[in-house]
Length: 167
View 1: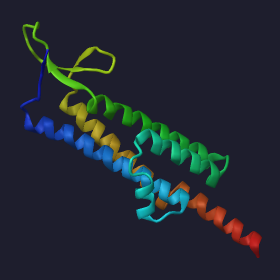
View 2 (view 1 turned 135 degrees about the vertical axis):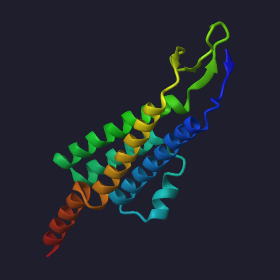
View 3 (view 1 turned 120 degrees about the vertical axis):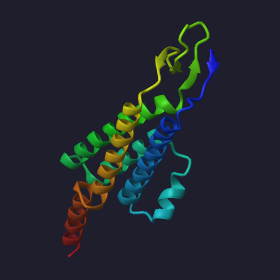
View 4 (view 1 turned 180 degrees about the vertical axis):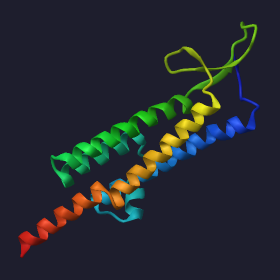
């Protein structure tokens, strides 16, 4: 096998877009941590600067359990975090895969050597575009949930209930 980089610049750009969209999703998860922990943007970013996607998901779920308590909002958030996990796993298959050409094949099509030590065809341009779209949708879903959606509404209800108890 020989290392390989596809020559198709549009394909390579699509591959790169997947990586950028995933970084945006991780940033949105950091902002969910900011929201749930009631931190400044700077503190949320500094506190999670070296945390990978898995750790971010764990922190979100731990903070959400404390802030939201048991109920439909926590379950909805858990479902969203599971979708984030699955999309991240797809991205990781790309990010950590080795692109090669096999020497012993007559038609040396590029292959991906997976973490399972198997060879698979490179993902198609359509698959890369679909994954970038999935990552974008999840980023938007996370941001909406924390800014205007069910997380924001649940936190507002909790704050109102606590304020009423203090009076």
